[in-house]
Image (cartoon, rainbow, N blue to C red; front, side):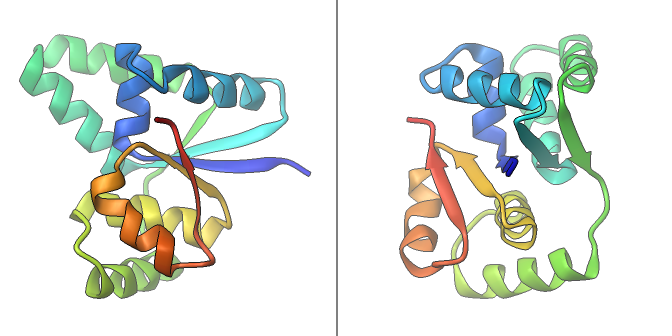
Length: 139
C-alpha cells in the first residue's frame, strides 16, 4: 500500500528553507521518488509558497523555486473538483482556517491522505474534531 501525503505551504517552505521539519518532508519526497509514497500540493498552497518567496526575496528566485518543485515527485493539483469544492466549503464554514489552508485540508480529506504541516495554530482544532483527516506534524 502506498502512503499518500498532501503538503501545505509551511511544509514545503520548511523543506526549501531547511527549517525544523525539513528532514521529515525530504524523507517523504524520497519515498515518493522510489514509488513508496505519493505527494501532492494544491495550487492554492503552492501560491502561498510563491508569493512568500517573491515578497521575501524576489520574483526570479520565486520562479526558480517553482521550477525546482516541478523536478520533484510532487503532484500539483490545479483544479477544484466538486468533491474538493464541497469539502473546502464545509471545512471553511466550520473552522477559522485560512482560505489556502482549507484547500490543503480538503485535498487531504478527499484523497484520504495525510496532511504534512507545522501549522498548529490553525490546524489543532481541526485535528481534534475531524477524525477522517490525518495529520503528520513536521515539528
